[in-house]
Length: 135
Image (cartoon, rainbow, N blue to C red; front, side, top):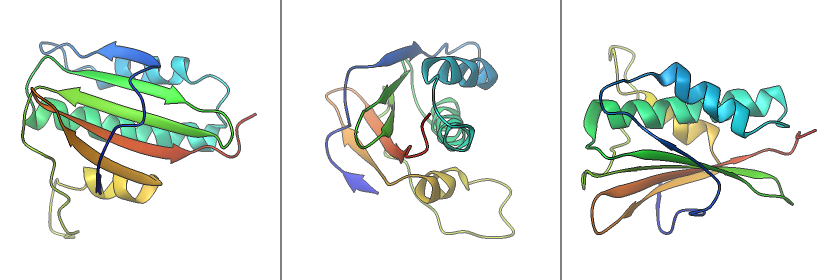
């Protein structure tokens, strides 16, 4: 994990609904927003989006949103999830006995880099996923 500035404020934005935790809808939006990604890269991005958005519903406060941005050369997808909670996510060590708490381990393994930025109200959790196979 790295502390620092999120990748970008631009790109595609999805406002999360506090009353409807529809992760499938968020994944469909992410897939449509990132047309042109190779399927292997898209799977990684969707897993990262799923884990970060699930953390919002499990631990954060609303309003909350997801931002996606795909850069050119070199190809990188930036995922930024913003919420209104000041509490930073915690990367816990792997335990085979744990039923939960693997989300950030997945994010850590699938991304080039990820981190947290504290904001005036809340935080941004960001992740960078390389996409060298893009068609």
